[in-house]
Length: 278
Image (cartoon, rainbow, N blue to C red; front, side, top):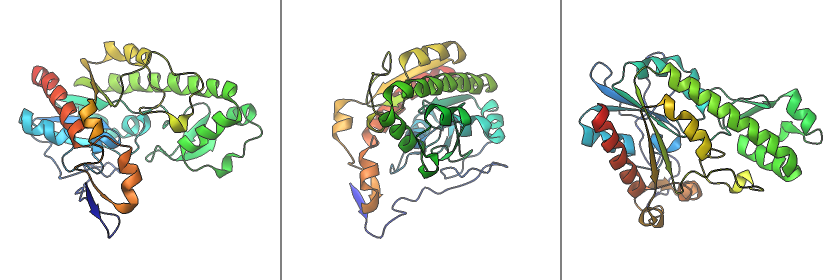
């Protein structure tokens, strides 16, 4: 592992902007006037702490520009609501969408920040009526808020979880419908999708992508050209933070993420799928 004792900025992500988007993406900037594959997703797609994330690895194999539109802590909202991303995906030879968690999207119970989807903005009257004893003003992040709701009442929390899962499925269908290019949905995690969310599972202890089940993925199969499932091998997970670049203050965050070896594994699987489509 590599440490930068000076603090933040251990890895140069060469941040860049495309078109009129207000979002800052990982660079180096790729050309959009030549054939390209668009990559949408969250922290793994962005490749935080990773020198060469899987979109760049796929690019080397495919020989086609791979544009990294990954956003750290992204939910489906930011991927759906940015008009530039949608237009750019329509012009792509194919679009790869990483499965992201269901907690970071606005729904009937709460609103998230439009660009930083992991940030909690406000609770709806409906959620406040379900949890009248909770002071929502003290929350800044969705996962913290959800974990507290779980601790207050596991029974009531089931209603919240169901809403998030339904909202995620509807929003993902909308996203894939808007994209005119061939869509490859990729599951990238240290475990396979579960048939259902385990009863009594604290969101703070759940593995990402949070709340996304096999049934939810099955509902999207007809909306995409291919679903690629990549479960990191024991060797990749055992490697821990080996090869990752982070500061000492970022060590805990880095330990929760899949490293370069896992990125290599997902790149191989995606390359196989994209060679058939591009």
